[in-house]
Length: 328
Image (cartoon, rainbow, N blue to C red):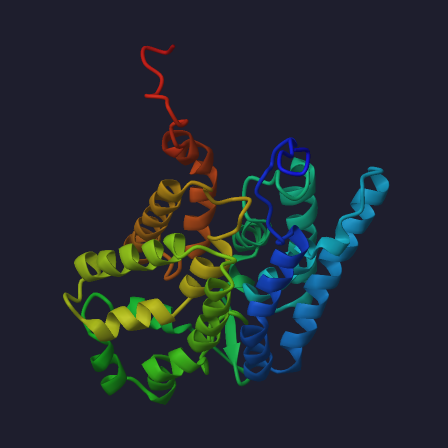
């Protein structure tokens, strides 16, 4: 009888996944993007990635040693934070070091470490750098030439011309920067990790196949953003313009790799859908009506702050219960 009846405490359903395995799966999924970023921007990109990862690891180690906390540098979270931050940055190196320290100490450790941070550490650091050093953070270069990103060029012409007209009337640099094919394969200006759409989609497919992330957040995010652009982008049903908005900037990187962060996104299925819808709406508002051509980072951080409220209103009713009535 004892072999048939086994009484134990919860959880009764277990999974082989761990924090370490999940973090390294996401890191592995970012390898195509990282490799292409190094190919696109040269050895400086490799140095920037290495510096961000090393600074994040060192910052976490020193903080936990000084605070006499358990060491967690082996769980992969600091490595992932450093890699994501590097993929969201451009040069110089000192700015990357400052951002890495801010991500680990201010956003992550001061709030209790992994699982307690209220926003994505890499995005928190990026927004901190955007506010503090706007000039450097919006100065992008490709092949040694500094210039505007495709999104900036598209936004500059959004009130009067279509992308086709920009391509036809612009100079050589404009044609190269706004070429949809080049935006898809990544040979344009921007941050290290946002230029190559195909590399990001390969990594996203890996995460979806491995079931590391759910489809709900990225699909709802991208779909709502696409609808918003078609309705309010001022181009009508211009699929070329829509494709350029989807491939340009940090939308794909944010949708698949940062909005899906376990700690700062809802865990309920309905909450994930609401989260994705809000992300799409906010990103659309920032890009179409805002002063900047981008808006993914701020949209994700704002929605990170709304996660507790989203989960509160979408938490499933316990089995056999009709819900709370009249506050009882």
